[in-house]
Length: 336
Image (cartoon, rainbow, N blue to C red; front, side, top):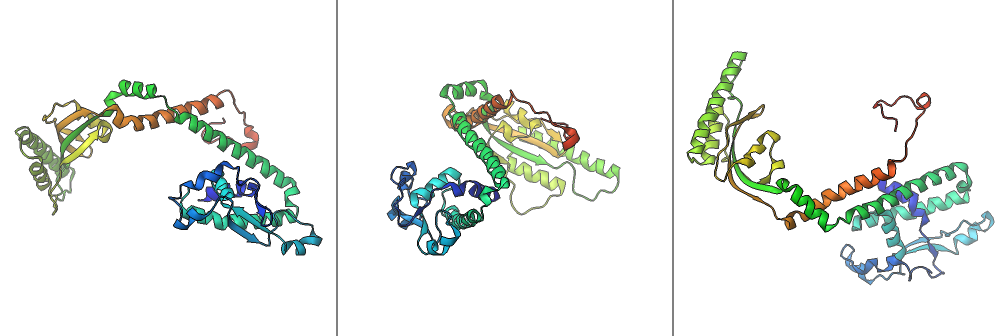
């Protein structure tokens, strides 16, 4: 939210506000005029507000700074008006959300910015060197943001062939399977005092895991076996265990467990042990998701890669030397 209001402060005062007695010249020609055609995110009453209708009216605020001698007279003779088209142009420029809450926040903050900016101009703060420096830096920020927006749009135009190629080259990523899993705690939950007692408790559950696997291979129900594992470990609970993990991909399993995808349908895995306990899997089904089902996912992956490469290609030709005597050495050892 802080970044949003900073953006408002940097950009908001550039919106052209018109006096109430002067019809907005750009209202009918602005591309933003048609943005309100879809009023699904607006109150029901917004549909009747035309592009050149006022949505904000700041009474007694002249759109331009007036000489001090005329300030009193001008204050009662003018007002600043923001039309719907102008307000939506501002929102589009700031790239903020179009929900009602965001619009209300901006509608409250923007007049405050206008009033404060007007007073700052009256005090000639816009003529100060400090203002010029900050304005120049703000310009750099805005230009960088505009460039990034354009690059993001270009990166998002992923060719269909690239999606197909990625799918074929990485098809293993899109394998999915339905599996059941028995979780066997690494040791019993009985009170163990000495190292020997801890080792004995671990040995008990290691042997239990092997016995459970024999029963699983014989076709025993995994829900029953999971309950048996909990009983052996001293784990209590009122809810029946659910060993069914549903449909998942390789990345949905711990790296040491992905060998489950090498099983055949109906096959039970060996006992997989790690620091968290022992695990037994059964593969119920395995297949590959069709390209159309993962097209959007692949597009997002490639968009990220394209964006990273585009930014790198812009930055690569340039390097920066930092005077460490002035700035001090970078704690990360990176002066670029």
